[in-house]
Length: 335
Image (cartoon, rainbow, N blue to C red; front, top):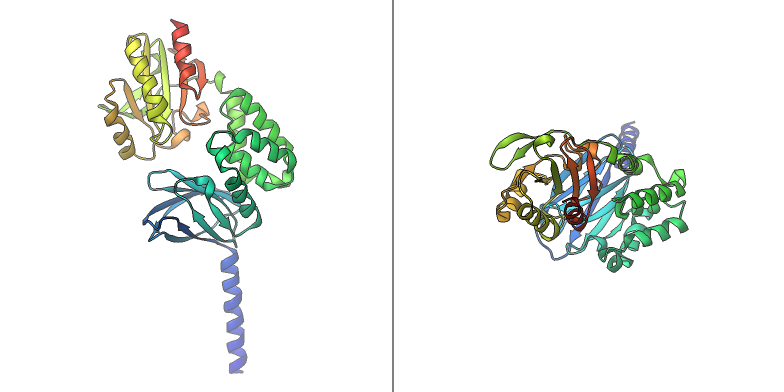
C-alpha cells in the first residue's frame, strides 16, 4: 500500500511538472564575447506587453516567461539597442546565441519557425544591413503564403513608413493565409497600417511633455505659424539626420516663422538628457514616455523613427516623412 501511495505521488509530481513546463517557455542564451551586461526583453503575450530584465554573466543568461499565444520577442541591451528577435510559445525551450554587433546574426532553436526565421536572417544579413529588406521580404511572402515566417518577416522588417510602403504591406499581409498570420503577431501591424493610411487627416493636438529648461509643460500647436516636429531616440540616427536638420532649420528660420520641436521618445529621461546636452540647442526639446504610443502623439500613428511631421498653427499635417531631406525641401519650397 505504501509503495502504491508513493507511486501515485510520484506520478502526480511528474504530471504537475509536465503541466508547469507546458505552461511556460524558457530561454537560455549566450552573448558572444563573454561580456556581462543587462539584457532586456519585451513581447506581446496575447493580453498585454510583457517585459523584463535578466543579467548576462560572462556571456550566459536564462529566463522564463508565459504567453497566451505564440509571440515575437525582442531582445535589447541596457541602452535599448536591438540584439535580435525570438519566436516563442509556451512549452518551448529556446536556445540562442547573440552577436552583439549584428541582430540579424542571431542563432536560435526551440521551434521550427524560429530556426528557419533566424537562419533566413543570417543568410541575408548583408542585404538587410544595407537596407534592402523590402524586396527580400516580398519575395519570401510571395513564395511562402502558408508560412508564419512570412508574417514574422513582414511585421519585423518591412518598411511601411511611406504611403506606397503602407499599401504594399497591406497587400502582402492579405496574401498570407489566415492560419499563418495569427492576430497576436499582426494586430499592432494592422493597426499601424490602418492608422497611417488615414493619418494625414488627423491633427496634431496640444500635448504635455517634459521640456528641457522648463520641466512639465504643454507644447501648443498655435504658438507658431509652422512647426516641425522631429521624433527620435538616441539610437535612431539622431546624430546623423535629426540634429543636423534641426540645427539648419533653426539657423535659417526666424523663431516666429518656423518652430522646431525636438521630441525624444527614449525610454527614460537619463537617455534624453544624455543626448540633449551635446546638442547645445536652443530650440524646444521635449521628452515623452511611452515611445511612439506616448500619450499626446499616439493618434498620429508614427510608423518609424526618426520621423518628421510639419504642421500649421491649427495642427493640420502638411508633411509626414522619415526623410530629413524631404523636410528640408518642403521648408525651402514653402518660403
